[in-house]
Image (cartoon, rainbow, N blue to C red):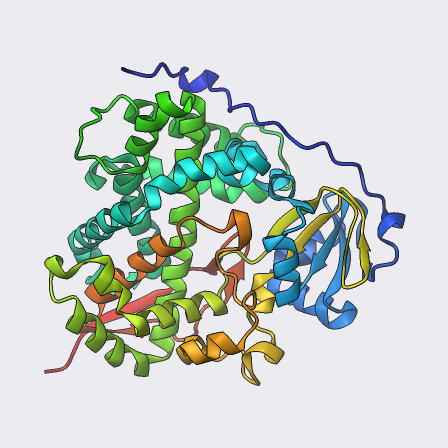
Length: 463
């Protein structure tokens, strides 16, 4: 059976029931320290200019619970492991994930998993989770290995711009793993469209007019819907293990609509390649700056994964040093610097009253760099932060690169597999070094990325 799909120009986002929140005025949060800044824009100019410096200054001045004004509304930020547990694990059901993220992703990604709550979210998460079970991850890992191996000429070209290369690689992997199409068919316009939709999510001006970001996003939107709509008509052969095939097989039994399937695939591809390219770039950056870690990682990976036949979940799980390196890179350069929620009801955190309707953010970017958690040199690269005994000694929500609770990222294991296999091929007979005199500064919104790119040199090992 072929699903009917609306023409790209007339696509309607799936209908998702939304919670109605009360407006929160300044006086309702007056008991919480903070500041307003400019009319309507609030603190936005300085927060956008340097997200980490802004968050650090607010924390130092006002403490771990503070408020600020931006986009015409007051926002609450709570920082630290206890804050992460309170808002993300959220056993009491105080917060809506969809309400927190709708102002950012609602225009372009309506129907995506993080824009759903409650029983509706649980149902759709279960459907998507079926594509990330062990058997599927095993297939994804073999696919990663093949795509990365085939992509070697770009990575072995001497000097590479790592962020752009990581984006192209991550998108190729997502194209084949999630759409079930040969990665060779991925076009530059496909990547441009996904990148444009993610980057324009944070635009201040949300009205399209010729040439502006929102106008380009509308063009990207039409292209992506056409791409996935066409992919839905591809033969659904038994050998396909991709996300789209998995959802199509569930459509009749679970009553999924074409619009729901398209929205899920769009958001999974966009979120995975963007966050993964950020994480891979951060990992390579730190290894280039700390080359003493390259030899032991190379030894571990080549000893365990000698060839394609060794690419199994069991073997990749043995690569503990590579795992610690990837985690440490994500600690230093949080792929998701802020995680937003919105209060469904009045609640309290550490005796501070939070009114219903309050936009509430937790900040992994800052929590991952607090000296009281990570020691006197929290910005120093040290994969031993993730030795088992040190992990056990910390609060379990001190490290949340993939969120937590019901809305924890489904792709966290997927990301680690991809990172390990990239290192396996890149370090085989080669070393990585900086190819620019000054390390780039990282910008942390909506994902960590090097300003101006990151030039790395991939050099053959001597002898």
